[in-house]
Image 1 (tube, rainbow, N blue to C red):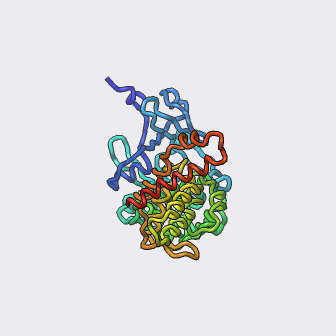
Image 2 (image 1 turned 30 degrees about the vertical axis):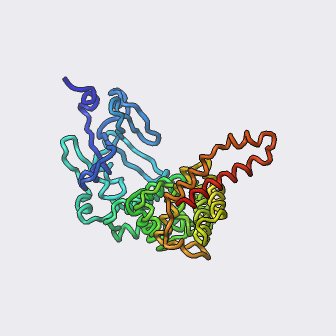
Image 3 (image 1 turned 90 degrees about the vertical axis):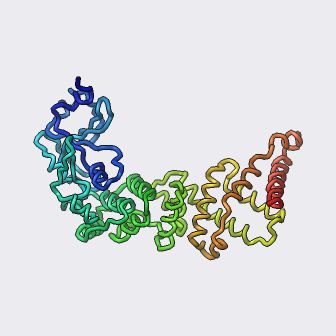
Length: 392
């Protein structure tokens, strides 16, 4: 007896396309599969129980697996930017026609249900040569492709950009096509690339084709920031911490965040990390390790960064500062953190001691003296941290 899954697909000419085929050939986990259906109409798909979800062109969810199935299509440029396209999805569109509209040859391969590879554009040869090569001249019509290639550079660290593709990317910058990119799409690609193995390659490739000043005009990019960006990956830091480290050398962080419409948490990390670094430098400069003033400064830094309310964020920032210290990144007009040494465990204990005092009991002790409660609570916090300092 045939399964419901097979009944839905029976008689359909379907292929896995794009990244899943590429990753399979590279021996990598395939992830989600993208399917293309050749020779069918939207009515055919609906009659089989597929659920339409596409906006600009017909895309359907399988009624049981919920995987996406798109009708084979061609596209024609009809305006500026990555949304300026008209799509055609008639039954006469061949698989090869669909593959020819894709960005890179390594993403323009298909696999049939028997596992055979369809490769009309020699993607396998470029996989072996470790080359990012555009499929055709239509590459120039979609500026998102510059971002995608740069993101792939961060993931596939041994691949290089074919010279003819580099020239096309530069042409897209020169003719202003790249200026049609919307902030949300830029941030989507940049944020994904920052989580890959070597994110500095993404920024370097954007700079190489002259796109970086156009898509992130406020970003100051240099070898030190590149080293920080890759160190953040090696340390396994979360995205907001990585963004904060990327922004360390840029004086216009708020303008950059606004330009890209960066999420608030990323902006907060970027705003607070310099405060953390300066606070750590001041803390390390104190000569007396067990001074009550040092405990007061520790609590003051925690408070300035709202660490009592958001302890996880505070410790993320301490980790990012440790990463910056180990990389030897200097703040403007200051020396680098001494020896790059940020004792993360020490700061976690200080935070816990400051946070875990019984503020309620202190408030009850000062009942009727509201003006003194805040000062009394802070004093106990400082004393608690001081006790740890003299014990350690």
